[in-house]
Length: 126
Image (cartoon, rainbow, N blue to C red; front, side):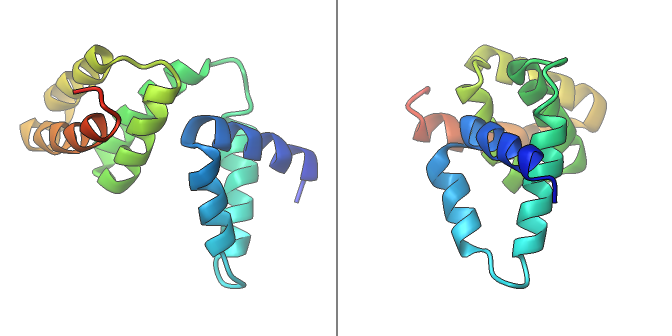
């Protein structure tokens, strides 16, 4: 493991998803899941999110689109909250879901609206 890239990834991950959420996931990791948590933090967050070529807001918008296309709604909800943290507005989330509807189908957009409502209500945005 590249310790510097892991530490960068840990900072980026906490900045987007919240320290409490990240620490809870890392603390819950055991001998079975810890290697994945460490690798994901280093690679996804250190290498991917650590590259400042794309700002965090744009990256969050991209993630919402890709996760929706894959139908990974639990992760979509996690990243919807992170997108709000990174400055994505409610109107921009709605516009992303509209594009999801066009390219991934109306049923997937319905799922995104359902998930977004849950997140936005919990965050006091609706």
